[in-house]
Amino acid sequence: MEKFKAFLRRKDIEISIKRYGIDALGAMAQGLFCSLLIGTIINTLGTQFHISFLTTAVATVNDTQYTVGSLASAMSGPAMAVAIGYALHCPPLVLFSLITVGFASNALGGAGGPLAVLFVAIFASEIGKAVSKETKIDILVTPLVTIGVGVALSAWWAPALGSAAMKVGNIIMWATNLQPFLMGILVSVFVGIALTLPISSAAICAALGLTGLAGGAAVAGCCAQMVGFAVMSFRENKWGGLVSQGIGTSMLQVPNILRRPLIWLPPIISSAILGPIASAVLHMVSTPIGSGMGSAGFVGQIAAYGAMLETGMSSKVALIQIIIMHFVLPAVVTLIFSEGMRKAGWIKDGDMKLEV
Image 1: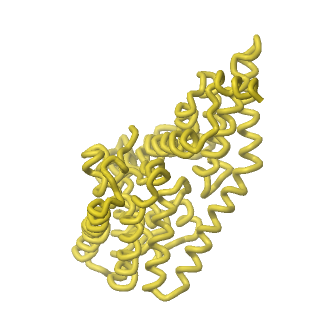
Image 2: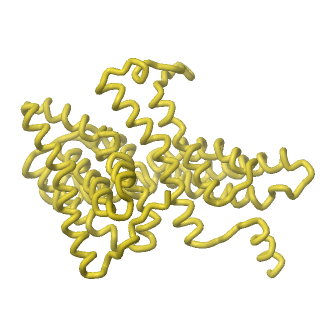
């Protein structure tokens, strides 16, 4: 046993909640931000400001055309896996091999792609580290083992993880069949939580065809998480944190949530309050893609605006509702609860500091 522990120390393999639940998870969120969400922002900018370079296909793969933004989004799996490997201190050959592992696990995971990448990349990284530089033909053995283990685990685990993610979607679908007010609370809270967790809320909403009032409640819940965390953590993260969380992803806070779960309460409460207002009172709607995006790249707002105009709502009313429900109220409501929790000592300075 002592020899095994010494081997793990020599290979820098640390089996701990901190290494996997905080370091790896935090790095994965950064990988997601640098691929899928940056790609979304690029596409949005190109479409809204009519920038031809950003809306014109720059590559065609298997008859599928890709713009600059869609190329970035397509690399989300590899980006997350490499980020995880970097956090786990993987040597170069293991780190580069994770590109293939990330692509496989994200593709096979479906809506639960990010969750699959997290589990598979951790195992592939540690096994790759274990065999790294243990043979004279390391340049062959290490990539073969890392990719082989990663792809095998992707084929074995990723579909099951994707199915588990879709069960979350079934709960959301069940909620949409309830009364609008209660549905607004459930959908807003569940989709908002899914957005912050390492599962794809956008993919779940798209797969379920979450439109209409349910879509309106969902995007309100997502905005409560993203804008809420951005504003309530401003004193720790300043403008960089405001932008990266407010129009990027609240998943950046997952490592801090694991350390201090109480910091999640203000955005969740905000979701529960604003969701039913959006669905049952203001009758806000959205599209399947927009409903799970929140304020990431302003995709949720653009989708909601178009969907609300299709219902016959005037452009002025739609714009005012979106500004108030997606930005102003999430910031105000979340800040009220978070400041109250700070005064009560439940949230302390530094609890939401991003490790970037």
